[in-house]
Image (cartoon, rainbow, N blue to C red; front, side, top):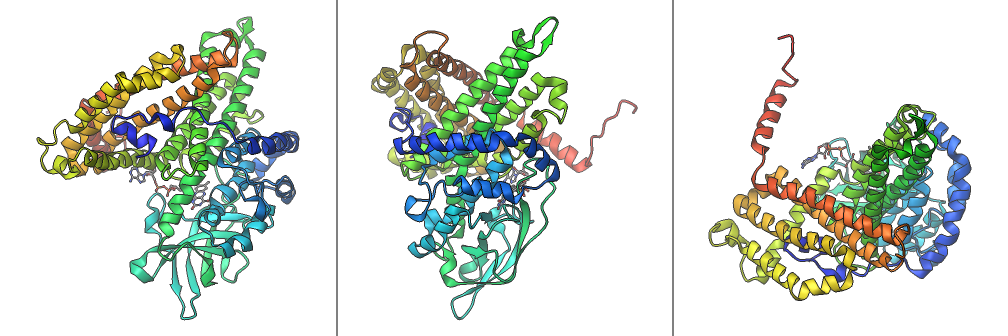
Length: 576
Ligand SMILES: Cc1cc2nc3c(=O)[nH]c(=O)nc-3n(C[C@H](O)[C@H](O)[C@H](O)COP(=O)(O)OP(=O)(O)OC[C@H]3O[C@@H](n4cnc5c(N)ncnc54)[C@H](O)[C@@H]3O)c2cc1C
């Protein structure tokens, strides 16, 4: 069971969380040079980024600069001409570039995170040697083509299809929408329904230069405006047999594996964005005087800066923990990856809101960077899986995994569904057992590893891990298999899981930084303070969510939504 799913069974898998992972030495070496080169290349272009945002275009000169920096080959192995960075190192690069401009990050990020990732994960030796060197140099830019007009979150309902010809080649037809790099890519990873085997999905590597491949105009977007987003169409495109990625019919698995593996890129970018917002906010707070003093002196401004910092630290902690899971080759990290995406993408939305609020009127003016930052960050809760769908995935995946836990207890999950009384309290008992372990051997194990200042925080996570297991038990008993349709409840389960997993990552990281704490003004001590405050804030959110599992207004809210959906409008007016 994965670290996150274990939480729902009342278990904190310490070995999956402690000690906090370190970047590989080889990554540090590459990053040392790379981060500086990125700053040198991007820092003088901040005015240009604004202009390109307005014009909704990225000039060829910029893309050539990204090629020259080696940014298209970050995660491609050295034997194929890339830099061979780990996921953790790659996410750090995206963090650096995103502190300058999100569209730039997206251009090489979508190429690596999703565009050509399928070749790295599933490519044959021949596909790898044919494409990776060109992808590493940026001679070929890649894009990921899954979404269609009728298939967004429900990706399995795509209509693009490929038919096998007698000579083994495929004929591909269909249209994809909102494809990042659509207008500049040379290689597309395309997902299509294959006529054989009841219309299963297969993944294909399709070159842009092949007859029948075309793309639409650059979309006029709210944010990340300079990055290329277009439709991509396939009209009777002949795809060679050797361009099927993984096995025929395995395309859906390929798509999900790519998206899961790519999530730390998005998370790393969000962290970079937050870091630059914090720098801007402190500058503004020091520079702006009102009522005769810098606004940095006001409690409400200081609270915003502290909260942004705390959330940036938390996002950083969870993103790099997940990157480490990926680099370590952990079997299944999909739930943890989803958690990192949900947390980081929402933390940066709160961060852009507060940074803009600190700058106030100036923040609203296009002359300043805040409004662009807010527009650019908005996409992060939408693409690569909406946060709603990811929350459902986090909750349902954990609940499903509980079947295995119950198997471990020699009780079939069906017993809970079929005989609610018989199954009564099984998980709660299990969780209590875990708690007694935690307060005995287990507790000593965790507490032995963390500094005394963080014991309260550890206690909070132990308590709410048990509460989560009890809540899961209650929901399974109450709703049985129909729990899949109880989205209000699933959201609460997901939110508790997010708080627990992110909080434990923070705890682990602060523990590893505690050794650097000498006085209250240093980064080690402040990291300890962050971990303490995060745990208390998380406790309040978790307590609220636990309470609302049983006592809530879900039925009333559902009924109100139904009423308004029927009306099609807000029906009250003070005139009437
Ligand atoms: C700028 C941009 C770049 C993109 N780049 C790419 C790309 O490179 N490649 C690619 O393939 N796609 C790309 N996409 C598409 C993106 O991944 C989709 O927009 C996303 O998957 C959501 O699909 P949708 O917009 O159709 O929303 P919908 O699926 O229609 O969802 C609408 C709303 O309903 C919610 N919802 C949907 N299903 C459920 C459910 N079961 N339960 C509860 N709520 C639900 C959603 O969370 C959302 O709030 C991009 C999109 C944008 C805007």
